[in-house]
Image (cartoon, rainbow, N blue to C red; front, top):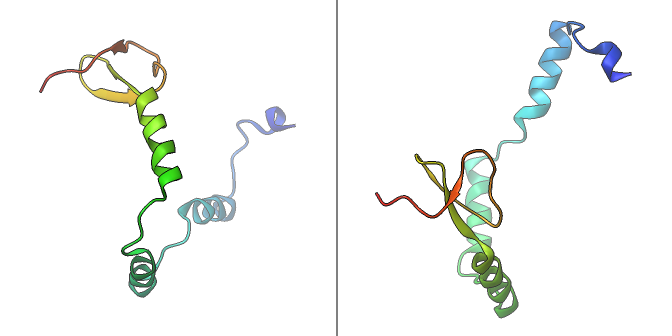
Length: 86
């Protein structure tokens, strides 16, 4: 069914609704301050720290000759193992 609608132009109203849906919810400064205050001083548990450590140990450096990327597997394209010295 989606293939049959491919290329059919959308109305301005439809495009506006899609745009609004993708913009997401914005937080007010007051809300941001409340969230910050609620999380201030918290630190990850030992279990969480262990999990984060294991995840980072799996990550390897890859580069495409211009930029470095840290990922568990090759991001594809022309990436090779290693890191470019800056």
